Image 1 (cartoon, helix red, strand yellow):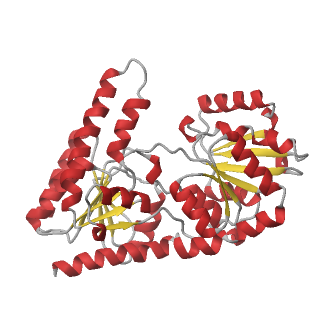
Image 2 (image 1 turned 45 degrees about the vertical axis):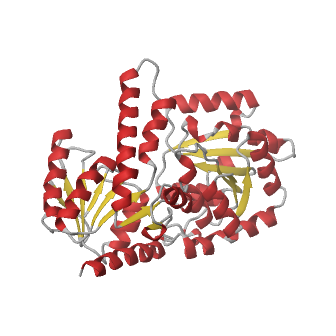
Image 3 (image 1 turned 90 degrees about the vertical axis):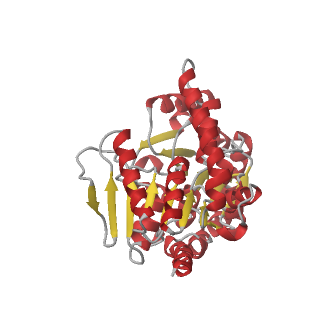
Length: 395
């Protein structure tokens, strides 16, 4: 059983690929989650071996569902219970697992309690003191319960990255009970041999810089907008393609940055695209860009997915200096690391564009490295080994 904060139908790639695609042939999985859309029955079939137990509308329905499933766990009705990113739910299911003598596992894809504190201090809208207080109270209480009670008693903890694993060890969680499972891709989908480069005529005759992802202010996208101007000083014509959701406020902010840099006509917004079309722009890129924020309490322990996707598609990358991105680039040799400033990023981009042969040689190193280290088929073997060990210990 997996209890998750993600709402049905979920979309996160590790849930869809790692669990639903690769692990359900090995284990029966019951998902316990709330709904994001209306009209679904309470029990939904998934792939073979997969079932969704979905609450109806409202918080009370979600609480009733969890309580009912906790009773099932306490009665020994499941072999392993895993809670993902939900500290308070983890308290309930850890207690139930003790009664049912079943292994309890916590999956931490993000330091969620620290995230609440971060949003309270830095992202609460002005004039919303109650929201700020609620985030501070939840983050404080849930964090204390998670680190003082839940994780120390968990049979195993899955962490997002080696950095997160090190952070948990520093909090007193035994090393041998933590497994780092970074974000990855299924290389059968991210296969450059099957994705043709974009035929968008606006890219013809230009060097193409591609960023895929959120345009949220915290992502530091503004520093990318000046890149075409830096490239122009080297006698090259470049266009920056921003692929992803384009909220009006974010587009206006970035267009203003483009105007200030004198490159408004060299910044393209595609909006959200289907995956094959997104990957066609990545395939067309001369350089892919991976900025990433480095808030100590939240993002330092992340494993940014877009970097791995770029590498799987065989493109050279300029990546911001971030623990997992640095480790990935240094291990693969498929790009360069730059400090997260506009000048440093632009200089790194110019360096790659100025030596196309070297850039392509870098990019070619990405697919084999991803296949060895970040393919979900391989990561599923790692996760399955942990589950098998827990199950063997209870027999």
